[in-house]
Image (cartoon, rainbow, N blue to C red):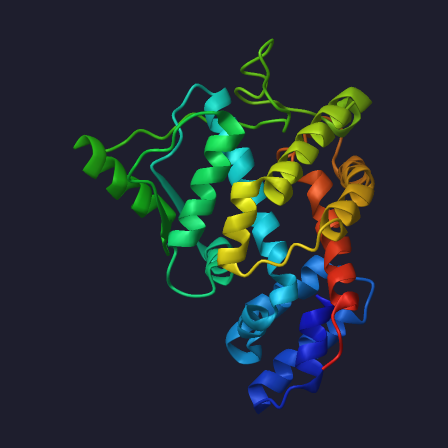
Amino acid sequence: MRFGVAGVQSAVLSPAARRAREYVLVAEGTDNFGSEDVASFLFNYDQLLGFSERLLRAEHLRVLFYLHFGALIYHVAQVTVANGQQLPRYLCFTGRGSLYVRLLAAGANLQPVEKLARLIMEKATGQTVPADFRIKLADDPKQTTANGGVLATGQIPQDPPLVRPVGVASDAENPQADKGEHHLEAAAVTDEIKQAVLSNARACLKLLLEDPELKRVQADLGVKNDPGLVMNTLERSLGDSFNLYRQQYADVLRDGDTIPETLFFLPFKNALYELSKVLHDAQPLN
């Protein structure tokens, strides 16, 4: 967020882009908007402000997109297997997710990102990804899913069952620990659940940052993973990030309402933000 704000403050812009910049700067300067809101403004006005183009050139921040993408693929793979399904033949991204994939790929060639996704899914689950696995970037993911189902089976596919995972890892004693829908109120998120989610998040980070094969893919993608810096920064922030968002849900949800997402990403949300600040501050001034 600070990287984006600093960029638009110094950029020479068109009149329309200057108006967009004012919206961003107003949001950045008030307590009514958080860093996620400001970043959302930067992406919403991307055509005017060129935020994504600046991110493409910011190699010191590329690890954030790598971690964001990697954590998502890791969790999707675990949940898929926990629900008795085979690993996917296609992964479809749209909107902001599509933009993140393009930023990670740094261009139109998605093969390195597909290789990354394949490795993560197989290492996270011990299962094999289909040989014709592909990542699809689409404007209409539902249409892409329907077309893929018709091609694969010759029939209109049925909607898959809904799942709402907790975010814990399966093991030999409980191979389907995250199967089905789990409806948890904030008060029901015990310390035991928190520690199980944190343990899974740490296992994910260890895989993404320390696995030798994945480190070679990082080099192909231009990801800079400073030994110790990234892992240590995240490790210090995971627990606090989980507590922050668990409390946020406790404050805003009404009695009887349940947390509307998996808990797996709660440790990452603020931890990645803290990492972005460290990476930004460590970057030498040009």
